[in-house]
Length: 502
Image 1 (cartoon, rainbow, N blue to C red):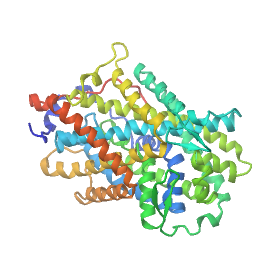
Image 2: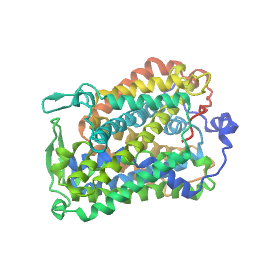
Image 3: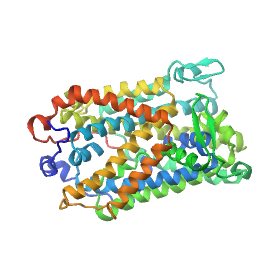
Image 4: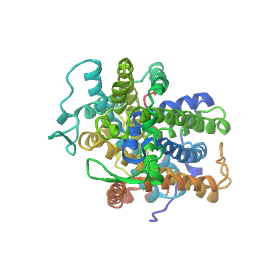
């Protein structure tokens, strides 16, 4: 059996259910922009900005956001073409299966675990950090003991972490919601999105007058080395500092691909898709740059390396914006609500990918078993909870955050390559939206994402190779033998299970 058996796109489209093919086209370009902004703004902005400033770029983290946005925009155009050409569940996994074959599809499907499951763990850890801020700064209660809100690999003042219980708890509760299929109110979800954007705007507006020009001098620090408290050496300042910052803050843009998955529900995807993807990225990029400029102007780099290490936004407001304690409290509450919705979406995305892989035989049938009452892939949700819980409870946040970034960047590279391959192998395929200047833009997308991967610490490469090695063992030990396509030569329709409306 060939490792590169491809799914027939014609058969995929023929097999897809009528309900999936005939989704009502109700979304406008404005709706897509709102959807993208809601999916993008989350833990990345409020947590990873400070990490990137401390470890890599200082004030020039703003340039890191620009580089990350360029890579996302190029990959987003490729997502738009593929999602309008192959309107089937599974995201990048399905696109790769139809263009590069089963083995590459397995790699990207396994890699997507780093985006969704590990990403959910990253946001869960950030949720835990801000919960402590809520307890101490808003409710004036005692914080959760250090050892029960940090991983065993973290220590402070001679106290070592044991496990991150709050992160584990929030992931557990949201997993239960997904299993039951409880619907989130669109109104409440919309309020969360509006609140998150409003918080960013308030910080920019009120924090601007507290910028100290000394903290922005020089704006691009001289290229040096910085050794963090874990003993890892980072390129700080200069060109490679900006590249490293881009790889770190890239996590802040994860979620924009939610726009591309709505292609078949868009009124005029030829124009609305690029507006939705590029519009949401443009709005968020402007907000991110202004936010990072204000944050690094209020507090020096050393602050983010020490006291501001956790929940840096709240800490910076309290220490450097006297009289705005109310804003710090508002930020804490709003961020906790926003983080919860991001975790829910990531857990949902992971179950969709695992469901598709299970229907194709690449994962055991248990991942596509539906609950008899709730009609959700409850067993997959439970297994995903265990995976997320292990990362959230026992691994530091910066480690899992960088793992998420490198995994997603790798997925974006394959999506860009898939557009080039599909243009060659199936030039007559009907495309609602076509990426312009192919193969130039996809190649630039590959280069931009590859550059951000290079900017990440070598330990992230090691973790990625280790993760892929585990995936290879599973593929050659189980998936290849049970592949539906390999054993029957036919494709299987990966129809989505009923899911909560987000």
